[in-house]
Image (tube, rainbow, N blue to C red; front, side):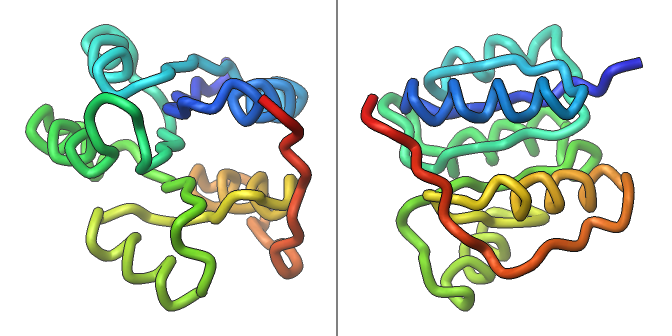
Length: 140
């Protein structure tokens, strides 16, 4: 059975890249462009993992995290933060700690690095990747 991942990302180009990349790896992908639609999806969806952009246009990613906790989805569902705001490794660790996320990956991201993180969080494969190398996201 395919594992379902929820991608909460407002940038359509990044959403598209993530969907193609994750589906090619055998995942089912559900997309939400903002926090409200993600929370609505989560009333019926039980994803194996959530990829969350913190900079959403309606409600912030940290509000989404708080709602996940209120609904008792955390820590049962691993959370991977996607952000352009925290490029330094120490900053990524700080945001992961502040939100309770299992991982934080900066945009632009390296596809192999992101997939290794996802697989590690899901307990698949060895979850090893080399240093994070950027993947161009294109214009969107």
